[in-house]
Image (tube, rainbow, N blue to C red; front, side, top):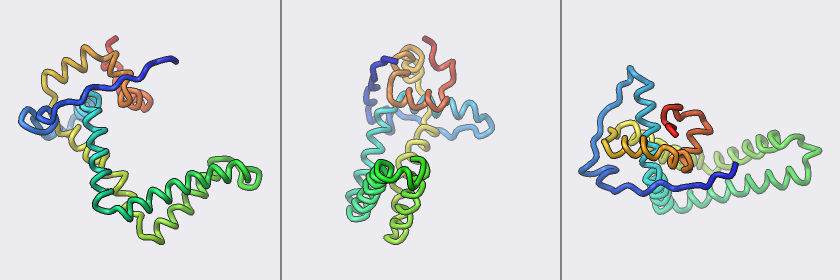
Length: 177
Protein backbone atom coordinates (compact mmCIF):
# COMPACT_ATOMS: atom_id res chain seq x y z
CA UNK A 1 0.00 0.00 0.00
CA UNK A 2 1.77 3.13 -1.21
CA UNK A 3 -0.40 5.95 0.12
CA UNK A 4 1.06 9.32 0.90
CA UNK A 5 0.21 10.85 4.25
CA UNK A 6 -1.60 14.19 4.09
CA UNK A 7 -2.17 16.63 6.93
CA UNK A 8 -5.41 18.52 7.41
CA UNK A 9 -5.14 22.30 7.69
CA UNK A 10 -5.10 24.00 11.07
CA UNK A 11 -8.54 25.52 11.66
CA UNK A 12 -8.79 29.03 13.07
CA UNK A 13 -9.11 29.53 16.80
CA UNK A 14 -12.41 31.33 16.20
CA UNK A 15 -13.78 28.30 14.37
CA UNK A 16 -12.35 25.89 16.94
CA UNK A 17 -13.49 27.42 20.25
CA UNK A 18 -14.23 31.15 20.04
CA UNK A 19 -16.87 33.32 18.37
CA UNK A 20 -17.70 31.17 15.34
CA UNK A 21 -17.97 27.98 17.39
CA UNK A 22 -21.31 26.64 18.56
CA UNK A 23 -21.61 23.96 21.17
CA UNK A 24 -24.46 21.75 22.29
CA UNK A 25 -25.02 18.65 24.34
CA UNK A 26 -25.26 15.49 22.23
CA UNK A 27 -28.36 13.35 22.36
CA UNK A 28 -27.50 10.37 24.54
CA UNK A 29 -30.56 8.57 23.21
CA UNK A 30 -29.13 8.45 19.68
CA UNK A 31 -25.62 7.03 20.06
CA UNK A 32 -25.14 6.65 16.31
CA UNK A 33 -25.72 10.36 15.72
CA UNK A 34 -23.42 11.26 18.63
CA UNK A 35 -20.71 8.92 17.33
CA UNK A 36 -21.05 10.40 13.85
CA UNK A 37 -20.61 13.92 15.28
CA UNK A 38 -17.47 12.84 17.17
CA UNK A 39 -15.92 11.13 14.13
CA UNK A 40 -16.66 14.05 11.81
CA UNK A 41 -15.21 16.54 14.31
CA UNK A 42 -12.14 14.35 14.85
CA UNK A 43 -11.54 14.40 11.10
CA UNK A 44 -12.26 18.10 10.59
CA UNK A 45 -10.33 19.46 13.60
CA UNK A 46 -7.61 16.79 13.73
CA UNK A 47 -4.65 19.19 13.46
CA UNK A 48 -6.19 21.39 16.16
CA UNK A 49 -6.58 18.31 18.36
CA UNK A 50 -2.92 17.33 17.86
CA UNK A 51 -1.93 20.89 18.82
CA UNK A 52 -4.27 20.79 21.84
CA UNK A 53 -2.67 17.56 23.05
CA UNK A 54 0.78 19.10 22.59
CA UNK A 55 -0.22 22.21 24.56
CA UNK A 56 -1.67 20.13 27.38
CA UNK A 57 1.48 17.97 27.54
CA UNK A 58 3.60 21.15 27.53
CA UNK A 59 1.52 22.57 30.41
CA UNK A 60 1.96 19.34 32.37
CA UNK A 61 5.69 19.50 31.69
CA UNK A 62 5.92 23.13 32.82
CA UNK A 63 3.79 22.60 35.93
CA UNK A 64 5.40 19.30 36.97
CA UNK A 65 8.80 19.05 35.28
CA UNK A 66 10.30 16.58 37.77
CA UNK A 67 7.39 14.14 37.57
CA UNK A 68 7.13 14.46 33.78
CA UNK A 69 10.83 13.70 33.29
CA UNK A 70 10.68 10.79 35.75
CA UNK A 71 7.71 9.23 33.93
CA UNK A 72 9.42 9.75 30.56
CA UNK A 73 12.68 8.18 31.77
CA UNK A 74 10.90 5.20 33.31
CA UNK A 75 8.91 4.71 30.09
CA UNK A 76 12.03 4.86 27.92
CA UNK A 77 13.86 2.52 30.29
CA UNK A 78 10.96 0.07 30.22
CA UNK A 79 10.83 0.04 26.43
CA UNK A 80 14.60 -0.20 26.11
CA UNK A 81 14.78 -2.88 28.79
CA UNK A 82 12.14 -4.97 27.06
CA UNK A 83 14.08 -4.73 23.79
CA UNK A 84 17.34 -5.79 25.48
CA UNK A 85 15.64 -8.67 27.29
CA UNK A 86 13.97 -9.77 24.06
CA UNK A 87 17.29 -9.75 22.20
CA UNK A 88 19.41 -11.46 24.86
CA UNK A 89 17.08 -13.61 26.94
CA UNK A 90 14.12 -14.55 24.77
CA UNK A 91 14.87 -18.25 25.32
CA UNK A 92 14.53 -17.79 29.10
CA UNK A 93 11.43 -15.57 29.23
CA UNK A 94 9.61 -16.77 26.13
CA UNK A 95 7.62 -14.65 23.71
CA UNK A 96 7.90 -10.88 23.29
CA UNK A 97 4.38 -10.45 24.72
CA UNK A 98 5.45 -12.14 27.94
CA UNK A 99 8.58 -9.99 28.13
CA UNK A 100 6.55 -6.81 27.57
CA UNK A 101 4.10 -7.88 30.28
CA UNK A 102 6.92 -8.49 32.77
CA UNK A 103 8.58 -5.16 31.98
CA UNK A 104 5.22 -3.34 32.18
CA UNK A 105 4.57 -4.79 35.65
CA UNK A 106 8.06 -3.82 36.84
CA UNK A 107 7.64 -0.29 35.39
CA UNK A 108 4.27 0.07 37.13
CA UNK A 109 5.83 -1.02 40.42
CA UNK A 110 8.59 1.57 40.02
CA UNK A 111 5.98 4.23 39.19
CA UNK A 112 3.96 3.17 42.23
CA UNK A 113 6.99 3.40 44.49
CA UNK A 114 7.71 6.88 43.18
CA UNK A 115 4.01 7.84 43.49
CA UNK A 116 3.77 8.65 39.80
CA UNK A 117 0.92 6.36 38.74
CA UNK A 118 -1.73 9.09 38.98
CA UNK A 119 0.49 11.52 37.09
CA UNK A 120 1.06 8.91 34.37
CA UNK A 121 -2.70 8.44 34.04
CA UNK A 122 -3.13 12.22 33.89
CA UNK A 123 -0.54 12.48 31.09
CA UNK A 124 -2.45 9.98 28.98
CA UNK A 125 -6.07 10.74 29.83
CA UNK A 126 -6.16 14.55 30.01
CA UNK A 127 -5.50 15.22 26.28
CA UNK A 128 -7.81 12.42 25.14
CA UNK A 129 -10.57 13.54 27.50
CA UNK A 130 -10.33 17.17 26.37
CA UNK A 131 -10.41 16.11 22.71
CA UNK A 132 -13.39 13.80 23.25
CA UNK A 133 -15.35 16.44 25.16
CA UNK A 134 -14.73 19.04 22.42
CA UNK A 135 -15.58 16.59 19.63
CA UNK A 136 -18.78 15.61 21.46
CA UNK A 137 -19.97 19.12 22.23
CA UNK A 138 -18.90 20.97 19.06
CA UNK A 139 -21.82 21.31 16.67
CA UNK A 140 -20.88 20.89 13.05
CA UNK A 141 -21.19 23.96 10.87
CA UNK A 142 -21.86 24.14 7.14
CA UNK A 143 -18.17 24.50 6.31
CA UNK A 144 -17.16 21.36 8.21
CA UNK A 145 -19.99 19.39 6.60
CA UNK A 146 -18.87 20.52 3.14
CA UNK A 147 -15.21 19.73 3.83
CA UNK A 148 -16.07 16.27 5.19
CA UNK A 149 -18.21 15.59 2.12
CA UNK A 150 -16.07 17.01 -0.68
CA UNK A 151 -12.63 16.20 0.70
CA UNK A 152 -13.39 12.69 1.93
CA UNK A 153 -10.59 11.13 -0.15
CA UNK A 154 -8.02 13.53 1.31
CA UNK A 155 -9.29 13.11 4.88
CA UNK A 156 -8.97 9.34 4.52
CA UNK A 157 -5.20 9.73 4.03
CA UNK A 158 -4.64 11.89 7.12
CA UNK A 159 -3.26 10.51 10.40
CA UNK A 160 -6.67 10.69 12.10
CA UNK A 161 -8.40 9.17 9.07
CA UNK A 162 -5.99 6.23 9.04
CA UNK A 163 -6.32 5.79 12.81
CA UNK A 164 -10.12 5.81 12.70
CA UNK A 165 -10.20 3.50 9.68
CA UNK A 166 -7.86 1.02 11.38
CA UNK A 167 -10.25 0.91 14.35
CA UNK A 168 -13.32 0.64 12.08
CA UNK A 169 -14.76 3.81 13.61
CA UNK A 170 -15.43 5.60 10.33
CA UNK A 171 -18.76 4.73 8.78
CA UNK A 172 -18.54 3.65 5.14
CA UNK A 173 -20.74 6.55 4.13
CA UNK A 174 -18.01 8.93 5.30
CA UNK A 175 -15.76 7.86 2.42
CA UNK A 176 -17.76 8.77 -0.64
CA UNK A 177 -14.94 8.42 -3.14
